[in-house]
Length: 295
Image 1: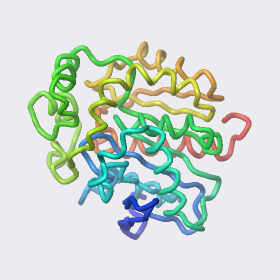
Image 2: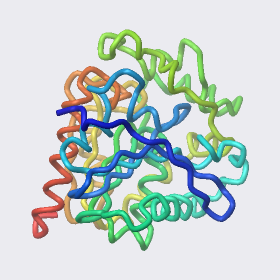
Image 3: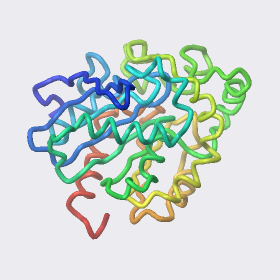
């Protein structure tokens, strides 16, 4: 079930002179399209970690009839050299919509597009969903973000703010936040050595201010929302109270589902429970396709 019989294709499209890259795996007659937005300091390979097909969102979703586009967010992948031009959130949103249109370019979309994002990629996903164009989306899944940092993360995050070093590629503090407990991941995945990337300059500002901006953006989202935190999330506060607080932000959404992923850490899509996590989200997408009155 986790291998669609083909591998994702690396594609690059031009958006007003900016090369935007993505991993793409298509279903012949898709139920829907899933647009996946990775977090900080990694590339789109986060959603198709090399040699780990069971953890691959792209392969699992394609096998179940979904086309998946894992986009390298603005300032990553092919657009890395243009990262210093991406400070305006509205421009990043426009780039996502334009890149999506070019990557699909007449290809079938099924019932529509669902957006899934991880960690700091949720800033972009939430803005994409809150945009006027977002009302046409099927829904959005956010994971590994929040409005209040975990107690153990506060000191490390303060250090990032002072030296503007987000996203850091190494360091014990970072490793503890996003890769512990290590038992939650395949041994060769811990540290993400095969998917790491330097991040664009604007992410320092996003990392510092997103928690304060999140409520205002969330209130403008008018589509179904699924929100997930890992049981062992160490960047953001987790647990029932934290999940309830997040759910309350989406005042304009017709449906909000919040969930804790058992045996999950910060990096849900490459942990040992990645398949369980992906199947839950694909189930939510199915609900949004087939239960219009509910979603």
